[in-house]
Image 1 (cartoon, rainbow, N blue to C red):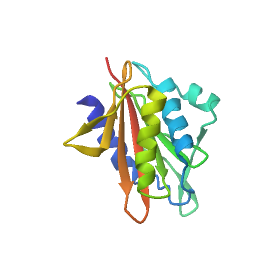
Image 2 (image 1 turned 135 degrees about the horizontal axis):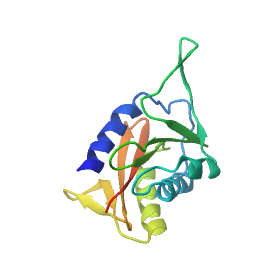
Image 3 (image 1 turned 90 degrees about the horizontal axis):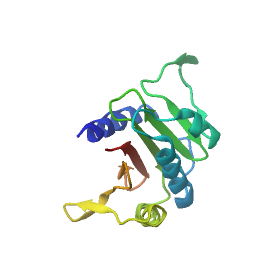
Length: 160
């Protein structure tokens, strides 16, 4: 339940971090982003140094030309945005991306199956949202945006 609450927080914060200016991400790029999160999330933190070593850079926000703070740290790499929350009881990391079309979401889910070497779990017989439970982690894939401008949000959390 703590992880799902964290997903809600990230989902609400994601509206502040619009990916509209980024190009659509390709499936391998999204899967690599998920793998970055998996490598960075442990029982007590999201290791930002690991993310930086993997090529993620901090993003700043501005309004009317003046810097403003973000409620949750935001990183970027290529066509991806990454939000993380280390100070929660359950650390979480979320990758967000625009995708070229709705069918790309299925391709991403299939590629995550292969990368994690486990089958996804589904809810209510629907293919999305999808969940994976690799050792000590939970991964949730949800769609964002619209049919005309689809996107994905993939949250990685630590679980005991």
